[in-house]
Each structure stands twice: as C-alpha cells, then as structure tokens.
Length: 226
Image (tube, rainbow, N blue to C red; front, top):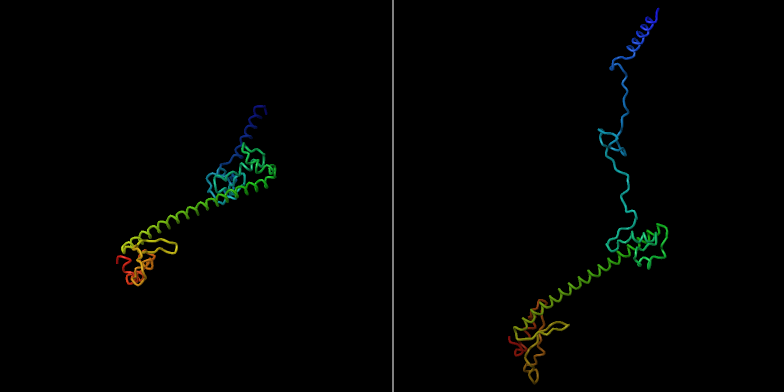
C-alpha cells in the first residue's frame, strides 16, 4: 500500500466518526438553564419577565441624622446647630451658645443629644405657655368688650323705661334704679312728697318691676308722670 492509499483510508475513517457523533438536534439531551426566582429582596432587573412578588420592606423609617426631637415652633428649631456646638465648640458667631453651654462642649454624643432635646422642649413649652397666655388675654378682652356692650345696651333700655315716667336712671353697684326727678317737698310724709323713698328697680331685661311701679303710683303719685 502506497502513501496515497493510506491517506485515503484515514480520511474515510475520520468522516465516519464525525457522522456517528453528530446526530439530529431532536435526539440530543436538552440542558436546562437555571431558573431565577423573584421574591423579597430580589432586584426586578435580575429576573426580567418574571412576576413581581410584593413584600413589606424591613427598612426602618427615615429619621434625621441628628436623631433629635422635632421642634413644634420654628424659633425652637435650633437643635442641629446646638448639637454642632456641643460637638465642636464652634458657636458660628453666636455667643448665646457659649453663655449657656460652654461647659457641655465635648460631651459624648448621647449626652449632647439629650441636652439639645431638653433645650428644644423647654423652648417649645415656653412658647406654648406664651401663646396660651395671649389666647387667654384675648378671650378675656373679648369677654370684657361683650360684657360692656351688654351693659351699655341694658342701661339704654333702663333709661328709656325710667324716662317714660319722668324718672332719672341711677346706676350703682347693687343694681340700677329709677328715681324721681321731682325735688322732695318740705314737711312730713303725709303728703307723699318725699320722692327719694319711691325709687323703682328694674327687671333683668331693663323694664321696671311692675309691683314697685304700682306701689309708686299709689304712694308717690306726684313724684313721677304716670
């Protein structure tokens, strides 16, 4: 066998081996790709096309970096600045910090936070009390104005009722009264001319008390213009 024959034989063998190893794709064993699971903590982009599973985040709610109480008044919102001063001693040009907290500079952070919290709460409480006092004063002033208006209106009614019988309104702490404008006549009371005894009081609505009015009509007919 010459070299040409040998080369041909080797080529035929290699072709046969290749034909045997390369079967139809349907006959080959399929290799499945690993399945990605979407769920809590799995970024959406890592499992495209899969359903999104809802879950409750376990992250704590956001809080301010300083961890201080929230001021109720804008003017009491100095916590971060005070905390910065307590940590660094830098008053940022405000001597108030030095005057009140110089001895507390350099304290551990938890103590510094407690000092800042207490300062904010004191400020809020002080302003709350000031607002309450202002509100009470306004209420008292309004009540006084209303009371004065009522008294003025009542006095106007009393004066009108008293004036109808020729009397004069007399205002006093014990209660207003209608007195006669007629001068007392000399002599004794047998003539019923001692008009200072015939005063007439008022009802709460400003009208004259009927019983006293009738008594004055009988006993002091010359003291009023009945």
